[in-house]
Image 1 (cartoon, rainbow, N blue to C red):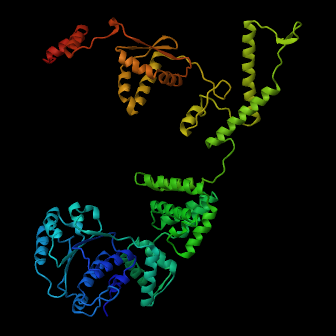
Image 2: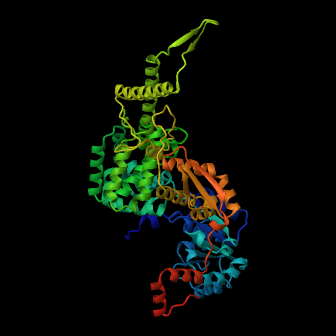
Image 3: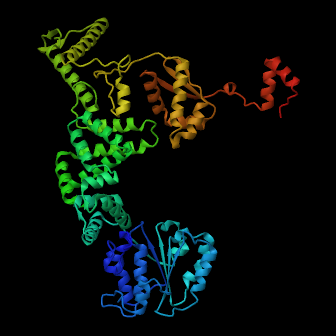
Length: 600
């Protein structure tokens, strides 16, 4: 007996036997029963979901002479027998992938002129219609819009977006959905029972996931696995035959990540890579696994996990161990790895670093490490609190004198020199207090500059805004700067302003200005026109704050003024610049004469 693959042997012959497209088949059946047939249908959707199958069933039903009460073909009339024996002259199938030219469409149009000899309609099924050329589409348009009353067109495609809008507008559109994993598993169970094949439900679930929503793909994989397993389909054999990553790997990796066990995670990764699996495949699989865990945390979304019942219980159990914050951070890390995977020159290292990062999400912080902004902020609060307590307990008493007239005690008067001495003493005492507090708390001494990291750079990286005050950890300094340093920071500021659309034009004009130091740290800007000066004056405060920060001098101020007539430089033409140059350098003049160059 000739062997027939399951995709052909168990191809649906009635609307009831079509899997996963109940709403579409009900609509087609109702249109037949109510005798409201359109002249053109467009069936679109992914591969292997039943587009061509439904087209054939529909063509058979509308030509049946004795429809059943449920709206299906009787299978006994001459039209049904001719269809079953593949000798029907009323149903034509055209593969547009190989017959996509104008001549093929013209031949098909000639067939539409001949009415059916048996049955009511001539049905033309054009598969992969998006492969037709533009000329073929244009030749098809008129007939598609106004065909003879006995002609029905059924167009099938996997890529609807490639069709001309004029084609789509002439058809009734039916969008076929992907098969769900439970639908595929149930259908495979029926076929396995008919074939006398024993199976494990988890094994069929793996086949359904491998099919990615296509029933034809699922049946092809089922035939392959059935041959390998020799009538007994088990989970282990399916994994070995299809060479798919076992989902147990992902359950282990998540458990190890919660335990911060990086070593065992690296061993699992190495084992799977040695089996031929790609690192990117593991990252994507782990991201899908985490998505299922996220769905399993809420009873309302747990049904969105399309796995076997045993695995669903595993996901629910693991979801109880994982916090929502862990899931979100891990998904973000894995997504970043997936985005950067193709561009990476060392893909395995990228995957390893990603898994290490996932395994460290729940790792507790080390005190005083500064690993996270919250730890650093806590340290600063401790410093300030300890310093305040120290000053409160050791504050010096100020000598006072009594006023005998009103019995009010007043502090003794001090000379200006004494005030300076007291201020210096208080500053030194506060500094010593802060240093002693840091030592008492075992806190490292953070410097603003030097070999260690600076609070300013750390705040820029972690978006922590460090407040600069006299009694805080960092005190604003007053540094001297040179004209060269000023010009460099000025140009740097202009370059940053150019990135902002609203300041792009202004930044170009500011580059032509040269700030000068009049009396340190006073800076002067000279303008050739008042409009530009007014525009700069509106943002002068922002410019001052920027330069104070970049030049580390809190006393910087800007003065703006219009240039005097003698200060405005004349804009020279090319000829005038040439004359100015040769007046200063006779060698240039001789070079121009030797090469016979002229200035236009």
